[in-house]
Image (tube, rainbow, N blue to C red):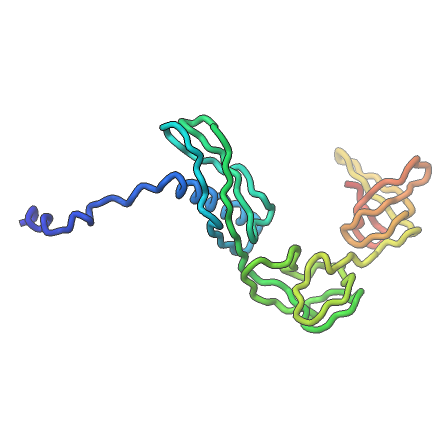
Length: 226
């Protein structure tokens, strides 16, 4: 009875899934690489093949693909993945696969019109869901110590390019410079020869020094050698 029952099952149910073609495997390798690289940047990315890839004509053998690099740091919009083509384990060429990427996440938009030199704060922006290709440098959170370097209109997505550091050191200010090496910390009184905000790099002049040094601003009147 058991054997008779098996005979009633359509043969198609026993058929194995078709083996992916080299072009499909090439596209799958590129998509997997793009997803891994996107995970390092945060947010949710989706990708699709922009155009079917072409596999070079080669002699018979075991064909494999190894992703090498992306054409963009941020895989958004149109970009491509560079892959090495290997035959029986030996690299025999390079190929590219064109992809399109979208990002889904939350960006910050201005709640109202904001004027130049406005110090950005959480009550001046609102979180907004976004899917697509956001403007380069779109803010995901409000940075500290930044102000608008230009006026923006209500609803605009705020980007890093819209901001500048609020200066906490002005040209001519006295600055305490700190440097550390091998467990030894040294502080020197210097004079600023440029202005900067938190995290900015400024030029400082120390008494007796032949040339100014560059340091990172850590607070009002304070900087640290990198």
